Length: 384
Image (cartoon, rainbow, N blue to C red):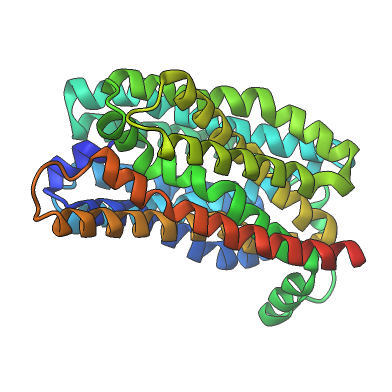
């Protein structure tokens, strides 16, 4: 959402702009396994509190940043904190609840996460445009601080934590090996990879520039269209959670159906002669947004294929999938955009529709890789 403003503030190229999101995603993805291991040892409450502190510090650092290194530093702090919080909340749910309620509750966690995107769509964008970079990110830092206070006051590990803490501790290598050997963990990784990398590409870096400078939409209207992601999460997430709980053997089919819809709509939009009609763009956003709730299915694979004492480790492994796919794709799109600009003699606009058509087609390759491995690991998981 702040991509164009970041380009002006830091005088950045498309590749450097992509690096801002890539760094945050690299840190987020790289922290997942250590976070998962710590989570299984010290519990979710401490991890959630620590993550909230890092996110508040990161947003504050972004608010005062005036150079690319400072901006990257803020992104690193935000990515580290985000990595701690989300996985810890997923670990917290089975400590308080059991049975078929967990898939629905997990989807609700994702829905609340999408509600956070709503803050960036309207108030954050309004403050960014009207008052500038520093006030906008200062507000985000304040919201992270409020979350910290709520976590300290309300969150507890739950009645199931004491039972999990009993017994001889497992070595780090044994935790990782045991979790990754489960075909359900690997299926979860590739499910998360394929369902969520497109939503990361769209929301974190390239969606807003594509709508504004590729499709010619007004900036305010484009930011309003992003609210579709929240609406889809609110409406589709709980429904998908209920379906996942009722038909656990069809979970991968639900995910593959959404992946097919995303690829189909991207193909239509990128092949459309000229700017696509508004209704086609809306359908694209709906399809991409459905990848968010669908990615939560991956965590259900981790939960049902692993014992509770290594569930945090398994969730951490799974959660690297979509963000690994996201930062690779974001960076490749930026590289292709810059290459096309240079090949064109550095004449005209850096962001234009023909360049977007070529650069965003990288997503088709990434989707093909993800689906292939999903099918391989699904066969092994079903056999088990």
